[in-house]
Image 1 (cartoon, rainbow, N blue to C red):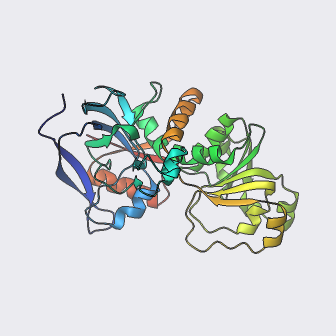
Image 2 (image 1 turned 120 degrees about the horizontal axis):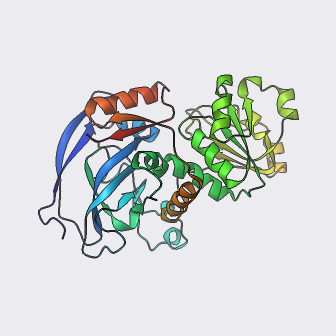
Length: 339
């Protein structure tokens, strides 16, 4: 039976000092019929957490894996002891055009991170059972945590692109998102090329799944003209690019998926060739409930795991993970482990 008194939850909130956190305790009321109480075992740190870090008194964290401790009276999908995770989407109306077409992540009434009080830099969390996912047995909590956002983001782009296993895929940027994009695209069956401005990353890229490596420092007009063309380019970097250069690497009918967050405006100067070639430039966020299930099954079957560095889930541990993330020192995802 659920705890009728509710739960006193230890969590870690932002402060008015940038990059600093404090331990707090808040009370979660008794479970509703469709809710689950989860003890957090691991939680990934995402760059999106860093973006929202400027909001004081905010609990961050949206890549958690945990153990089910209590379930509401109508919950049948999960039981105590199950290892589960949840992601960016926390609730939606389940009855609009988007939800009814399987695209619940686009619901106009969606509740997404950092909304709500179920963020995961904490020892426990309460979630609705519809937005919780069983973690495959062959994925350890600390390995699965980054999949709940980073892995889901790149998997969703591959899924939405409808790229066939014969397709040619390029991944721009080999970081927290990029190294997982290489692994997923390789397992998808595609020919995969890594694009990085760091020549020394070639061996790492090949290890994570790339068949070939391109260094963007080599990009000249002649190089781009003679380079192989791609059916899909996944841009995983938060940087301003010469967009025309990369669009010229696309084959006709090719798609460019923007996953990273550039700081400046996006401008396509060579618009006529872009239109004549019927190329696609689109944004992409992570997927909804159905795609989470697909991603976890795919990752389990192909043994896809993030490269991680571990940090204690304490105020100092979180601050250090954030510092390393902002300094681009992570190889490649930080995972926080409660003490």
